[in-house]
Length: 404
Image (tube, rainbow, N blue to C red; front, side, top):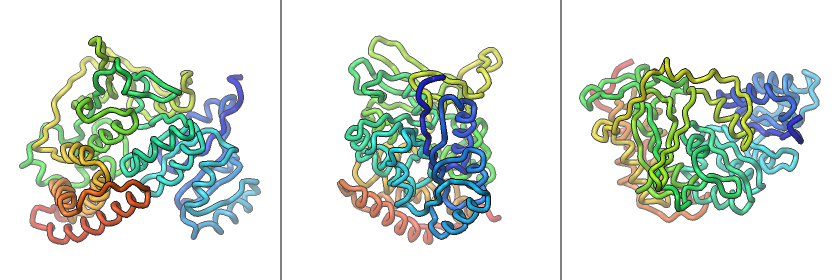
């Protein structure tokens, strides 16, 4: 027995991160019990998970599906309580019945529940980028005020978490011994391509990531290097490090997930398979190491580790993210919102691949920088950026867009 059971609230249970979380949890019945499961609207999938893990409560973010969830739980003769709506999600995140929250809801919809978990002092396994990009200062203030422990779950920030010194359970790059952090990027499917060659790429090509199995939106972000730009913004907030001490290098093997350099010249790196179960096991078990079901890394089979400087001319999205971070305030929210509009248009073949950073840049130029101290301010900036980006998009459709 590993001590008192940790009680898990899993937000985004029906997604890929949810599946990986439950895979790790199921390997350790002596350590973990599932207290709550949530989904957006996939009632059948959620009820199937409830039948297996028998949580105390299950919730759908879309309140229109409440009756279906309630009735399906009753039909399955499950004692699980049904809840619905975003207020219910925030209530579950702060509930004293659970001590560990896995925040895997995609998009701005996950921000409120993430902040609630941080304020309640939970162990927060964070896989929701928007919580940091939109509201990084607010999130870290909530973590400090609630004495929460924050473990990032994406591979790069989890690697940095493992390699940095810790204060109060949280990784902190402000330690005087830390010189810089280095985020690695695979380079995506278009590594080495020129701008001219990128002009005609298709959504199918952009979604064919060479190393990771991911959703379509994040695959496009990886192909444009915007995903790495968002991770730069996250790293700044999560670890208290300025842009001058954040570097990005392209590492096509995706074996080293990120590095931390110290003032004595030492550089610590975290290596592993491209499998999210490793980072989730770190978050669930930290500071202990627990079995994750991930195959050992075969260094001889890998053979070599390569590194390159990102091509800022072919992939300007990374530079736009650095620019947004330096501006601060509302600008990162504008960047993120414009990118979501642009990627959606690209996937619908309404915008060329090179139009993604062009639309983001034009949206950033159109909207003024605002201090935006509150979450409401950030969400308002997000909404306005989406409106402006959608309006600009109508003027950008041209012959460079590949037909279906």
